[in-house]
Length: 196
Image (cartoon, rainbow, N blue to C red; front, side, top):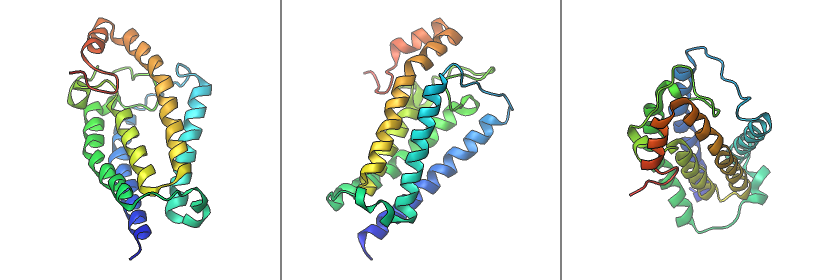
């Protein structure tokens, strides 16, 4: 069987596992029925981030389902590097689950915290303040390698840049919400990389 079929099968598995982990956590977090405003995030950033995410999804599904439609964006890289992307994607899944399980009902898709939110400092949040973004970066880099697709890489990088741009606003709102407790948390934990 040709390697591309194996890579597409691996991509399908990554998508299914990611959705199987993410969707139940999002449903559980949204069960409160609380409406979350995107006003604090800024409508321009909110829309741009979601458009970039949508394009990432479209390019990824196109690569999976209609590979010839985006074959012009596939760049030749060694098979071992693509397999590294497969291994990396699957290795990220436990961290992704651990992050969402630790975050629990606090999960939102914007910078605003829920009314009953608690400051999470356990699980992967013990070492970094934004492990969800770390998981996103690992998954996007892994899928870019796995597919060797420049469109997916550019869309993924755009999403990550936009997440990094909105992080200071998110942290400011967390300081406003949790005060000195969050300030102490900042002193002991790295934003994306653990402090040792």
